[in-house]
Length: 229
Image 1: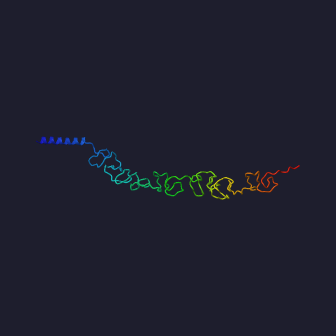
Image 2: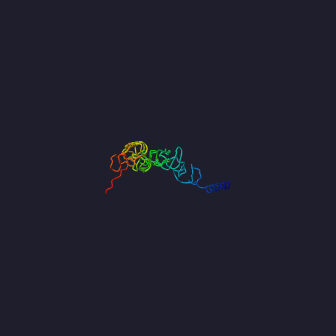
Image 3: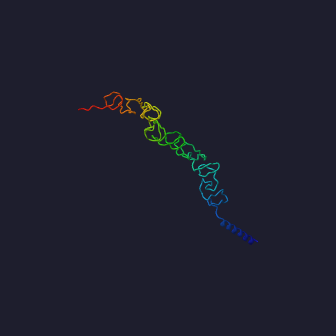
């Protein structure tokens, strides 16, 4: 009887030993959730949802993993980069200093005239001829030509023939035709007649006076000049 008990005990010991040897060791980070592990993501790194001891990590803003109730997680706790310090998506706002679509620029304000307009689009460079009326300019017609009402230096020009009497003009009848009282240079024309200085139909000459003896007589006919000798 004693012999049988000893033999049975030996068998049990051998069996237990085989079970212990055949079973693989529990290893955190092998990708298999073993007894005693809450998770196993195949690594021993922290801050990825499963820590180095294979315990489930609570949500942590700034760990690079978007976890409830986070809206975003860019791996830091800084604001101004699209994801704030509480892992909430930051709203795009012109003037916040953060360049986000569809902005072309964002200089941290909503003032015009500094290169970035109030809607965060790049402003044209300040110069005469860019079509934008800027400080120091009287006009800006989008070019650098004279004679079109706005000079190459963005100063208002007097333009004969525009119906507006401007500095330097005596008249402006909306055209550049002579013979209608206002000439092509916007100066008053003398009434038709001999002696007005304008050569008109029927006249051979008009020297601006009606005195004879000066080559053009009182009726605006050419005079024969005396020949010396």
